[in-house]
Length: 301
Image (cartoon, rainbow, N blue to C red; front, top):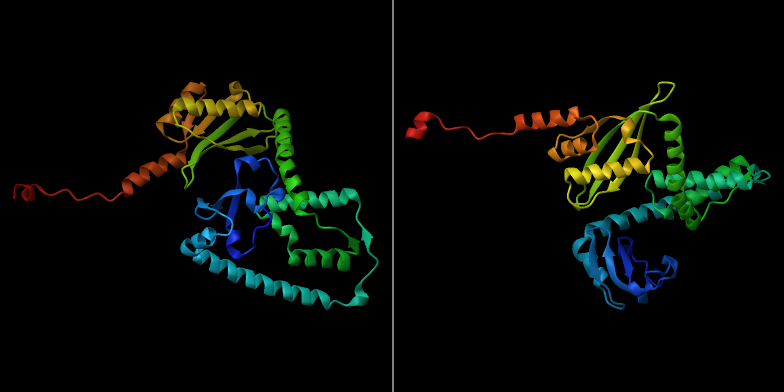
């Protein structure tokens, strides 16, 4: 959002636009369009009015330790950039050779690999604009490799990351159609710290060459009651989405909860409890400390 002062606490806070401006792109929003601020650390909405210091007060009161850590890391990063810049500026000018530009196909592949790295390692999009990374790439390409290559902008990387999941889904669906005849599935429901639940689906099958494939296809938000009927409906929906015929499912692996058992029965497929989960329940029960039972004489006084 433009017109937003870039002090340290804005690293942890984002402004939320008013409903009338929700259709605008992020780069077109200004502070006048904001109705509230949102803290990424404690997931709390903060009253925001231009010219007031509600955001600063919130950060100082509740997240002073995060501010101190961020300031320390920023200073270390600045020192590292200075060191890298000095090292880069001291390179031998005689070592520079004729620079050749990469082809459009090669440049496109670079953007794709960079997007995969950023998304796969959960790095921020701002990584592409870091001076240290730019200096390193420039040294490896221009000075050592003799090629000219441009680092993509944040917008280019965002567009590529947005496109990749759809391409990956299409590729996996094609792979399943070609390779997967009969299969088994593993499912589990996981709840995070904010009480949001997710339904996971992993498929297991053998190819014609007897190679075992394990693919986690979905980790999808699963709101509402976790009844057996709801779980069965969610599982059926996910299998249809991936074009997996329920009749070809040889086994469903689940946890030992009664709602999971009911879901397996409603789906009409063979199912069993996960051995590791069953052992955990048994051992956890054995390890629970029990209060000693008073002896008979003690009870009689």
